[in-house]
Length: 265
Length: 358
Image 1 (tube, chains in turn green, orange):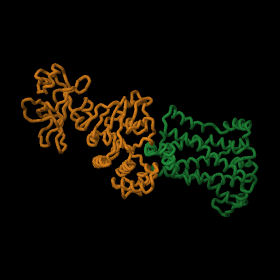
Image 2 (cartoon, each protein chain N blue to C red):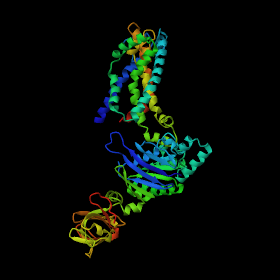
Image 3 (cartoon, rainbow over the protein chains, first blue to last red):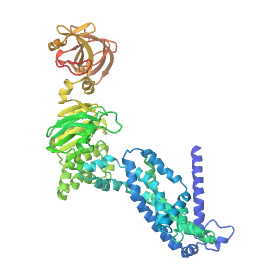
Image 4 (tube, rainbow over the protein chains, first blue to last red):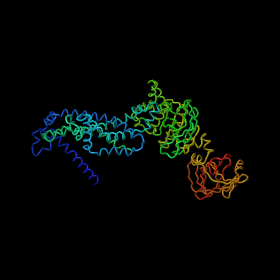
């Protein structure tokens, strides 16, 4: 009986999450006219790419997509460059204040992006970074760092320090031990952290909208034109934004489960 | 091959209330097998890691061969090590695991192949070279760790409780095998264990450690027969050595309660003093009949072990362990009589617990 209730609960949650995604996908692949029909059919009756191609050809979408891609990739590189060593330190070294540090990292996520963006906009205006992809990259890196540090720390904890010591005993330098022993084992987890960061950056809209005017990322572009765009455009935009996230979850499912199975001490 | 010389090694960990190793000096001769044994927290692993170069001593020095290696990193010390957790690399096949040290030292490929094959043959791993560690049993993983350590032909082999993760039967088998292999390659070996039976069986010499110091070092039989203090006697041997106080009276004789037993003549100079008598369970003769020079005791527990019967008996206020022949017939609450040959008795200062020179 309890098992049954649990299953019903799971199905309900899944439906709640999946229904909007399904509807958006449906709408994105419907023709402009069929969107105005009432009642809207719940199965694809007249599949068409007209809506999507219309969206892709509207002003700023391709440029926004390129910007999003650049910001996303740069954020991944920057976040790993800073976050990986930090994660390694958290995993390997017992330093004063390690626990508070980990908690503090998470707390930064509690700060609303808007609160963060306005002073950042001021700083970027004075430094000339305003309305560049670099500004958005910096903001996204800051947002991604806590998760990057915590995820990579969990990954490094899973590789026993004795393995690194063994490598050094048998002639490896500390860097060689890291590259030959730790990295190959940590790679899946690091990849997961990277994709996680990329999707976060791809979907982040508020900060990107505040920090740019012309160099909009895709979500910021969609958001700024949302109020005066046709219905079809909104659905196509929603679809274009949700697909990378779904792909990420599909590809990284196994690694994410592994990762969350390891506990951080 | 190289000898190891440790001088006044001190190491303390931040937050630790006392030193992990306290001025330890130790010499391991070229080709010798020395076992460090002691309860957990006695500093044995810290000492080993300082020899390996994985810990830096606060003071003191480590020499390997004729070189002072105190400030050298692990990879420059020409040591080899087997870890407690094996620490083999899960993303490499057995072949790459064993050959790792040779590859890092840039040994030519054909020679690596030959030496890996030799080491694998020595440890019965020849059929497993192309498997990943996850496809091996615990015992086989341990063999990989040992093969990886011996293949590099380092001057010094360090082992940190290599058998502690194996089940009891496997541990016993591999212990003998390990002894054979180490003897065969003749490397200077420093071996850490908390298992006193392992220490006795493997070591040319056994160093019993306690609280960051070496309590006694000597051949296995020497430390077993003549413990330097009460701690060593209770730590080595199963069951541990029996201790009970006795008053030395003229003669010399030993008074235990109202009874008197003969004592070695050399004890005469302690006449009038109370000493702690230490005697091994198997050195106590036991009889169901009263006889002259025998002490009466009451049986509390009878444990047949197959090869012998282990008795827990009460002598006055003291509990003693006695190893009786397997045919010895007794039961709880029966009376038995005990006798110890004066030459098998060891004497300790009741205050310092140190052995008295008799």
